[in-house]
Length: 386
Image 1: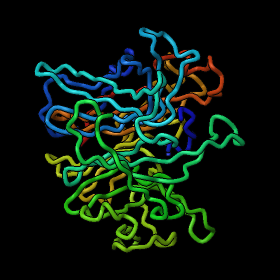
Image 2 (image 1 turned 120 degrees about the vertical axis):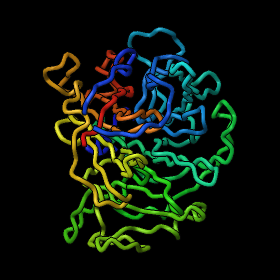
Image 3 (image 1 turned 30 degrees about the vertical axis):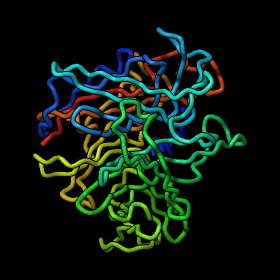
Image 4 (image 1 turned 45 degrees about the vertical axis):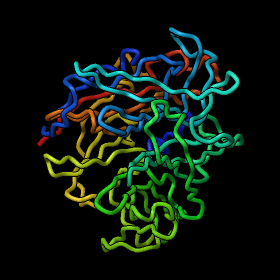
């Protein structure tokens, strides 16, 4: 939940701040959004902050947003989150851009008997990963989370399984009216894969995934993001149709630690990989694992499998973890860096990140409850250097 393990959510692992744009420097294609339409995430509709912030363009007008564990309240105009409830799982929102370039967002919080609920799963704790659309069907990969009360807070959780929500018709305005069924990946995800759909890419006849992989075997201690693909026409039967890129840069059915190809050394559980047509380049955007997540980084490649260039900084200093910033706190860490390509304009990239606190979450007056600027997507615009 908000307790996302530092290395894992950096790996799994604003009121005003989310609207602020940190500007960096380069070259970027135009995607024809109305001028000045940039995401922002005001507190409304009961939503008071969430992490994750994966997005996907559903059609010409609508973008779907997926958040992880979310602060919720019936009270309007709250100035803090003291004793506020938290939805353990996934919440959703839909945004649009008006003709005059105004970003508008509506949060759709699921409720039953007066209680806020996760958008997916009734008896499971499910975190969202990178959604994708293939054959006119929307797929939302999900991490199944288990509370581990014997572990030290705030890291008392474990990722135990993976599944994918499948939505064949997403035309209804309210996403909770969409019919959902699930593809259970139990048995399909091999040991060492900790976050399967850290990002998802539909390319030609396959869907590509960049799982966070850690093999701690003495014979093959490797860590990073590997590459898996599934034919689009086999998405309903993924277990028998996954192919893994190996070190010889060929595809094979199995995953052997000694042969696993680390395509991105980032080692993160949340990122984006998107194709920039004007540049004819793939661009990966993610948060640094160093210094509590103090840089937003990017790499480029000619193909989804690489080879990828060395990381460069989109943002040199993240203010929430910069000791010289008024936003700094020693327990803050930042993660969940990713691009939202549907909001790009010529020469700019639009991305988000989220910051959290290591303070004990069980403390109902902890830092992220006292400070609304934390634990919500921060929007940045940046220009990629040439």
